[in-house]
Length: 146
Image 1: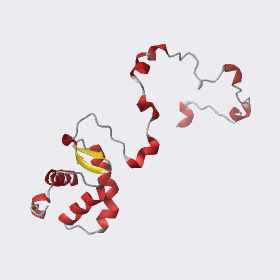
Image 2: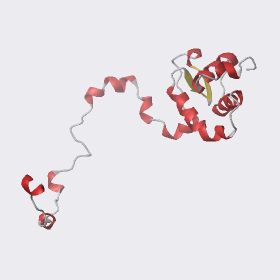
Image 3: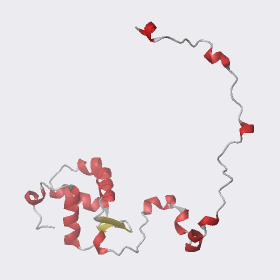
Image 4: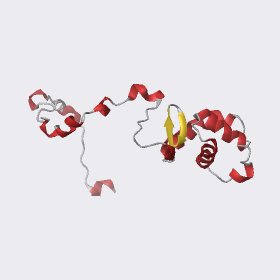
């Protein structure tokens, strides 16, 4: 990292600097360490870490050059596409439908969706019979508005 100089990276985005760091390191690095290196390289105040690390993390997640593997950021091009990445902080939010078998997909047409649990039967609907809400309603002509 010592061969990167402030003058060389001053005009680059945090993501571009991250790309350079990961290219040189040849291994994954966690978010805090990456951002700390960038802040130190650019000689920014240490408060930048606390104030902007969330935005930095978000920018990495939206950039297709990077991938998060076991809590470490790495370059996507180093990893095969058959790996499934689950962020350890989002384990509780894992979609249970992700484990759908191929037979289930092929049998999807057999699914009977005629009965929708979310619909309300017409017999159950009871509208408010409050006509008093409209008692004070006044209808104006355009001429009356001028």
